[in-house]
Amino acid sequence: MCLRSNPPWATTCAGCGAELASAGWKPPEWLLSPPGSDPPIFGLRRRRRRRQWYAAFALLVILCGIAYAWSAKRVLSGGGTGGTGVSVVSRLEATPSWESTVWPEAPEMPEGLFTESAATMPESEAPATSEQSEEGAAGTATHGAAGHRGGGLAGGARASVGHGAGGARAGPGPEPTVVVHATETTWDKDGAMMVKVAGGTLAMGSASGDEPEQPAHNVALHSFWVDKTEVTNEQYARFVKNTGHPVPYVGEAWASAQNWDRKAGTYPDGKGDCPVTLVSWEDAVAYAQWAGKRLPTEAEWEYAARGSSGTVYPWGNAWNASLCNSAESDPFALVAPVGSFARGASWCGALDLAGNVWEWCADWFSPTYYAESPSADPTGPSAGRYRVVRGGSWGSGPEPCRSTFRGFRPPEAKSDGAGFRCVADVG
Image (tube, rainbow, N blue to C red; front, side, top):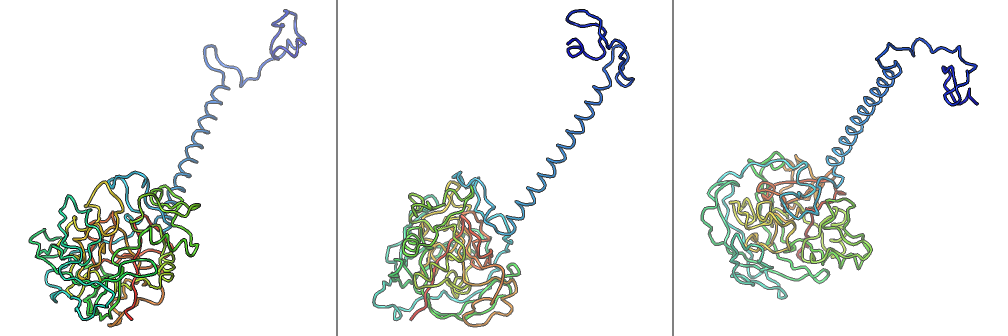
């Protein structure tokens, strides 16, 4: 018992004092240490612990590098990420999930590039079932910079818009009155208000814009109908109910504010009149086909936004943050109800063609397509990797909101700052 309860080097039992049989044992040389110093085993332990800490730190660095590379790859590949903390309502802290990725900068539009007069809709083309107004079916828009969100869906209103003397960065300057001629009708399938775009010629692109916007070239277009606003959550809910199509949902934090309830098939409370977001290009096409319409071609979208006069923005040549929902409009709001900026209407009466949400177009994207584009009703390249998006969003500055700016995303990508509107051929 004494041999088992005492260390091997002990000569007497610590309990009873008896002499132990192992009295001749001596510790090895490596275990001996001078008086007043630590045993060598302590140094060995310290060195081993230090090596363990070094290994743990190196492993942490490697894991951080792998995580960073993975997240960067997802952002650049358009996997739907890119925004964080969208549940925070301040625009100063939240950014649309596409806004900080691959959008190129676009220089200003030179003065005098387009000099044709604004196109108008001849009264003789108005169908018997539509409403036509030169002075404005809903009166004159009188919203100032402080109260720009109260515009509603003013139909064909006489809008005071800004025309600068120069390009996209021109100052406010005088605001001449622009008469908007709008021929409107209600589309039976989804209840959307549509405006007729009279056929004409568009000087498409920008001679001084980014390379994908060049060269500026003339394009002839037939008449067509275009949704007056983006497709809303309420309209998209009809489509979901009738077809069983999956609701807009992305299982990441940045999308939480605009995700639908997948079980109930309902959109977020109070957002029925906001544009539907978190939809891919395929989702937009499915909706358009259900409604008996289609997505606009890139040429049709640009023509509806700027017409034959070739304005920089839908309302004119001068940037005015009070005429659209952009990063400079309201720092405490994200997606706005459609039609909230009636004074920013384009020449044909379409609203929200600048800001609020990016809008999917039918075309594949090619940066060199303008050099080979047909001169009449172009439909874009026959194949590609990205689809065109236009118009900027609530997180965009003046440049992406220009009517010639060409955005592009993978067709499967979804964003809290992207939606769509539809067009229909004139019978």
